[in-house]
Length: 355
Ligand code: GLY
Image (cartoon, rainbow, N blue to C red; front, top):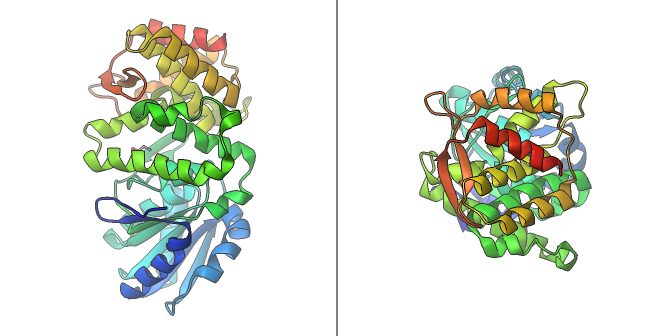
């Protein structure tokens, strides 16, 4: 699969990936390499990765506990301290080996340590491959509120090795699929159509589907790296999706949803909003709802839940002047940005989602 070029870094795939990484590390004469992992990637991915790392540069491994609840400033403080104790300097580089928590957190740590050191993302989950590792967004949560603190700082390279997915649980794979479907809905109807008959989908095509998802994301980010316009399209499904994810995280009577699971609900709800604004046809809406429900099922959301979820919308990062701004579909494969929607319509979206 072809290497992709972003503004100032490359995204390398499978057999090309590790030789290019090794060459890059040596060419840039880094003083030390820090490999950031969590408990899962330490056990399952690090043993796969280390034999490919061929360099004279000394390296250290920094391991954190797994899970979104550790994506916070306290974990950053601990890692900044460890980097200091281990003698990291401005010529050090961090390799983020993990899912979205590791690439978001590691990117933020690198972007801020000594005012910025280099980092490379080596995503090991589908979600991190097709979304989190590409485009330079990094950050941490405040409590259950997602990604409230962070920067947009590009990695020096993104290394996609799809072999890592062989150890990924089915539920995590599905979570990543949600972002791939989103890329089709916002920018490429043909790509979306590929997912209409999952029984016809050959999993040996997965690498090509991943590559295409990254092509779509990369094209959008390159047009608008700092998210003043079209990059907001990537937030389709995330306004309500993030609020749902946060609500399920903070509510101890509920099991937490994976990011893609919450975003799948958000995409159905925000497609309903698009329908109500006459931006998509009823048959488009039904197709989106049926496709996503057949993959993700229906999450139980009571009337009380939805009121609390709507209260969380005030924290959405796209809000302007205190107003919630949605990205809505404008047909399949196109979007309309900065759309305000009446609360009554949002409530109807939740009502329709149940059916
Ligand atoms: N995950 C959305 C973005 O990178 O803009």
